[in-house]
Length: 99
Image (cartoon, rainbow, N blue to C red):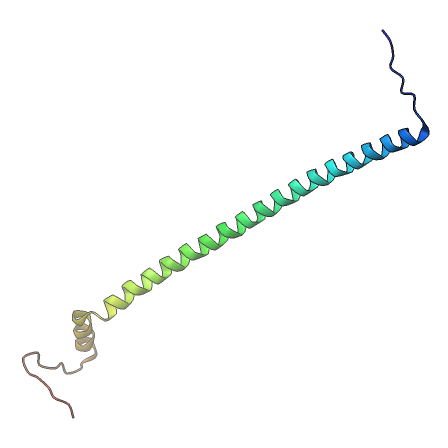
């Protein structure tokens, strides 16, 4: 078995070392950039999830307020509250004209 020995000038071995160092540094830079971009994607995903949870909670509270509003504006409910407060109710069979 023969061993292969590189025989070259010092300039060529220096150039080879520079190329190896360049490719190694580029590989590390690529690796760190991929990890950093992945970290940013995960962080953005958590922010989107948090915003969607807040939107769902807001929608639920909005729907409950709409239901409460419709119950309060219901004519039968208004007459019931007026009777509880002792107010005189208008006659439904008469028409009132206000100037």
